[in-house]
Length: 113
Length: 109
Image (cartoon, rainbow over all chains, first blue to last red; front, side, top):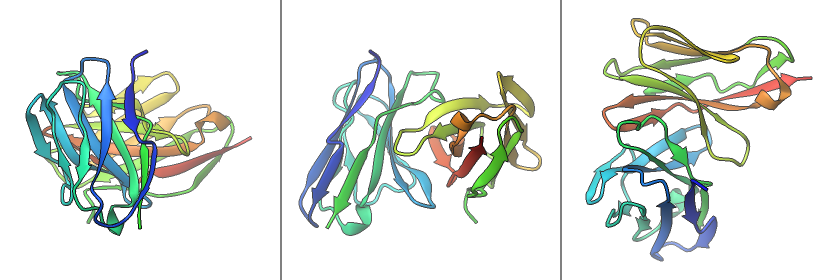
């Protein structure tokens, strides 16, 4: 089954404790992206990647890191999480040349205390 | 001014009516425009995208784009209770996507 998976789906952590949210897709897609969704603000793009070893900042990259060492994986790293990073996070992927047809993962709900 | 604006709603329409959802954007460099539907607790799913001025129809859905007015709309004909969801407007500039806050639609049986 074609899908985008995220782990964990739910996470409660404390300020300053490094964490990684994994994203994996099995569709051989080149484009991958991370978003956060907050009430009243909609989805905001954090980082995106056009292909392996190619990443770029979205609109809200501060406090986040990403890497794209393999085509299928695009982990989101919070080196020192803060309470303002409490949010619902979505990973998405799409094929090259069809970037508009993004497939979204199920979401990861993060609470930073 | 936010780059993509939508009325947050809720927008309530009776079953069988036409629901009209509106979106404005500020960046004239935006290249393509999208409507996503998001059910509560679920991830967004693409309904339609449009690149050119005018209308684009897909089943009960019609997207309308007016670049001069920087305005995108989505019409849902014969609205069903299953259409009750939040509708997200998004624009693409370069490889970057910018979403609006979403409009909550409620279709009343």
